[in-house]
Length: 524
Image (cartoon, rainbow, N blue to C red; front, side, top):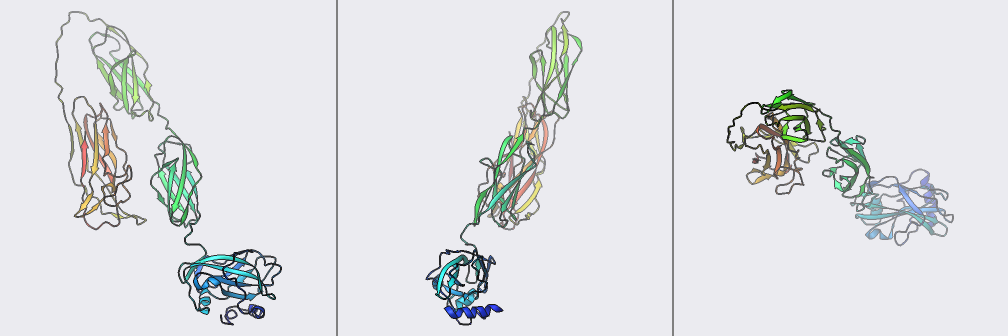
């Protein structure tokens, strides 16, 4: 090392002191044969990363030993650095035995390499501050810390191969308890905020949706699908170069929705009395009028015929087969969805059926009920989606649109109900393709005949721009048959028009061009 290398980088009084103390031990000081264990403590560094041209400042974790009167700084590392090079010769500038003290690195890492005719190679380097007895020329112990050169010119204070510890905290809004179907937002806060990775939200051992990318330490997921009951919600972070961490469980109560009360009123025509074989009409009125379901009419404890579908809050049954004698009629409303509406029973209405006077005659009346048919048709078979555009995070391309109306007509005897499902092929453009599982839909009922009882299928989310040939995660995309709508038994006869909002995710690697897919709609 050049004799003036240290003094040319210090300023002020430090030059005089360094020069004076170096006269006792020599310009370099005393070094161990290899990096010491740091038996006196550690060193704090004034920056977390830097370049080979840096000369950082360090602070010891405690004062030097009582049998020392100065200190020196050495650097150990791979190759030629193994035996240690002087960074700061022996000095007593700022020296303390009672508390930690600052140590200025006299030479930059690059200058140390040049002065010792070597180079910096990537790897771990150890900085050692020795407490020195200058008269005896002995080291009395050392403070150490490690840094890592990731290239020949750049270093950092963290092992690039070690995982960074993380913590994950979970918050849930709105506050519990909530009613099933409420839109619940789960927010995970990951520390440090620079951690790159994803968070998997869980309900007990079950995943809630797909992993969510962490952005600035935050990942958020919203769902309306939390099951009824006491839920145990957690968020688990994972990412390359970072240790996994799981939040504390958040207990969250989801209650079943309260059903809306209903009332049912019954009117009987004629009122009071009726002759045998005459037509008697039972008319039920259900409130609220929007309540979907059917009415079962009773004569005492005996059901009269099949349940009658409620339309606009009304259901009617006519009969001419009542036996002679006293009758006591009631009407019982049975909701389609018991979670949405409550059952209700009308007050009893009495009717006296009197004997038929005179001779009787009879005729056998025969009719043939035609089988009827179930038809499905599309007036316009061409659906053109807008050109996909880049998502905000740049991860995929998206587009959306709607299916043209689909007409389903059912004239079949027995009114058995029906089901319409759809399945799409891959989108093709010559030899290029887009996976059909990247298409999802939200079924819609455009209109229907009044007596029909139709339930649209569940929303099917598109896959997240998966590659051609890849299998979609369970429940995503229309590559498998998905329900568009269902008509219940006794609720299918008539004409219904169906549609669906479409959503398509396209990989950013997709070659430009016009892609077409065939959506097959099946009614059974």
